Length: 545
Image 1 (cartoon, rainbow, N blue to C red):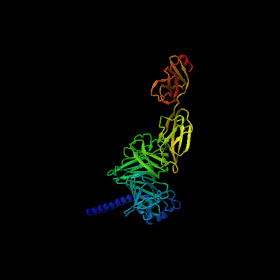
Image 2 (image 1 turned 60 degrees about the vertical axis):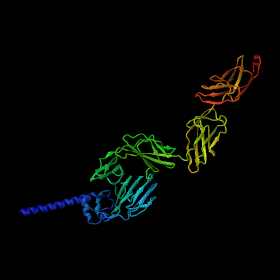
Image 3 (image 1 turned 90 degrees about the vertical axis):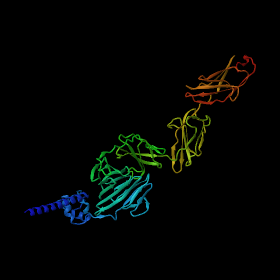
Image 4 (image 1 turned 135 degrees about the vertical axis):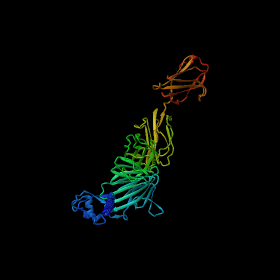
């Protein structure tokens, strides 16, 4: 009896182990599955025939999905299909390049040489892609999913499989360095199983928009979800990361609980037009951001990237790009290294040909009253120049404009009225058209020195008068015995429009006047004037001269 009891227990234990093993196998099988969307005309028989390895799975598929009638399944229903039951094809599965910028290379499996990645190039399982600095590539897979590989990144297309009769595309990317941005469309008729693997984590999705980046030289991985849901796994643990959240996984540790992504930065004050390089991109600081990432692309989808840079300080200073119209995308990076929500703005660049260096007049200088001249350095790319002159700093009205100057100087054909002015010049080339204007330069046309209008003599002095000045103006008057005014007899600053000089001995004398403006600027001397005083003449003979 005792022997029979022991034997019965042994049989029970054995059956229990078998049952547990089957349950574990069942869990393992079910864990690796894909979701098939039923189409019009589908039933379990034709679905099994198209996608599974054997018709024996019809009944199992019915039991797994608890289907009452295997011949009539409503379109749109979701079928769970274990991966282990499906037919798999690797040989004829390819990806292709939809956009590339900069130096990007691919190393084929078992090859010894790298090839340059080109537009529309076909990529196969096992290919390794490397992007150099400021180089980017966008890859599209068989199900329409896209991966944008950032600069200084290295990825391997570890697995590209098709399950069944093109029912599911299974893609496994190995990220060895850098970052990828991934868009997996949930609207495709083809099922999608898309995974990014790093040394510390695996990010798995079925229809979403997410980013994966390696931190600290591969020790940690950041996963950031913009749309949909991503399952991040590491050290036999998994976390579900929904849209608007991110997680970090470190080698030897499970993923951290998801944290909210930083909000998009405020770009309302960020310029949308630039005229010089490098770009100086300003934005309001984002609370919680330890650093920022900026990307520049020629399309709103950012598949054709031209620049990508990170800085811990503001403003950004980067972007050696050609003139044209672009899109700018900026996001904050938190203290974990998780990158936040994107802010996007369009901008234009017109920095070429560069404006010439202005040589005269420099800011604050005065020009010749009768024949003003303007000079600038020769710009090697310029076919001609455009100059504009205004008394308004915003050039809302023009005192002079010439759009076709062939030389690097201009002599105005007519004088300008006295006053304050602004001027700037632009280079024009045959290939680039008109570039940006030079910096605004100020100059002035001084008021001329007034001419003497009358002279009055009395017993002891001579008084010279000239026209009255404008409000705030003064004058500088000099009286000398030589034309060079080295031997001054009288030197006077006055607000009045006259000056008196003690009556000198007979001889030839010279006098001149210049205007002093209200801000202290002194204009040019008026033309020197000669006065002859006779020798030893009686006073009464001098009256009226």
